[in-house]
Image (cartoon, rainbow, N blue to C red; front, side):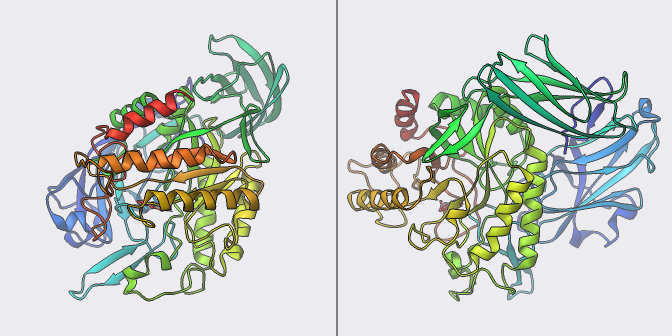
Length: 584
Ligand code: GCB
């Protein structure tokens, strides 16, 4: 799915700004049929939850309505006109005037609808979007809606971040010629002094022309046809920390549709216990992150994004994981341009019922069964994988797909659940390694799925959830486990989560849990162990910054495992990490 970039033949208009807003309980069920009877206005992009002071909005379970009048540019007569929603979390229904025109499930990937026959250039249209935040066993991520004792619906979920909802990313209109370029896939390989860019174009008509230009605008290769190979001699590679992007111009005929795709020439390969980028062993440093900030929730904000990249650079991080869902595409565009390496994750988080059995009154249930995570969950999961790869396949920054976070991979049924999903991922993209983030209860001797994947990604909390406060015992446990994984699997290991809740400003002479000193001692201990186990090729700390979660007795205004506070102030450990990572 092409990102809507502007070109000689393509224009786009952002519909960001204030939209009318109402809860489903406040308006008629067919609220799209006229002007939304509300005085509330909500910003787009933003999660709606933390905007209003009314707790009924923050905790709402169900549908909310967004509406605005849209003017169609008069110059778009004769063009194909498309409405694109970058994310409706988790289920979006789009109405134009009185008609339902699109529906989409999956809160972190975009969807589009062709409005050419429904709107008139120069005219107005009433656009209404109903967004439903409910999660069930049939959605990714999964969840459960129950009725509380007071009769209100209550949303239960097993992931540790607040269920922010609404329209957190851009909504826009764009126009293309009526014969247009539907999709492009560019795959790069390198052989000594030559690089190959294999391009597949899906378009109306077969008069497809390709031109590749370097960063100085010089043409370095050209070809014709919907399926073609461009050969680049003496290529400048896209390198971690040193990005280089070619411009692939695709046109239909002499003056038909034109699209420009940034192309980074680089290779990715897993060999034995090494992860290679451009044939060189790569060591991941960085974080699991979240899209999370005060007031905006998961609303995309360029200011916060650029600040986060600045902090990643300052601290010496070369990578991050899009835990636990695909991020706004702006993140990947920026990572492409600045040489930051990304592990790109689906929203399949919380496929692990028993880890959080307490939430269901302590009862245990099988995670994988027709009544829980069954065929419908897997179908939604497969769709989430397809949509992630369709959107992100051309980003050089993305070096690996992570198809789930902490599933119950030691439980019966996990292999049957995951085997077809791994096959699907490889079929959708044969060029990138595939992984999942493994949870501590599934160890090297009882995990049932890890051999299906290319890289062992481990989330471990020795010294926090286990051996709390006892870093000497935690060090032994951590090393035993890592050495065990390395002995059982000839695969590289990335520690994709390790960290401790740390209250910024809390200090003690000796390192005790929750203090800044403990966070320093904990991470130093992990790093000592990593340096003793050669199979460890990556260290991504949990988490980049403190973030909001659902209320609970384990969380005080959210999860505090950030190396930065929620407003991006460094905790003491940030300076320690900066020393380690800046000298690698
Ligand atoms: C995990 C999860 C992550 C949590 C983290 C924690 O293993 O993957 O989503 O936030 O632990 O802090 O407990």
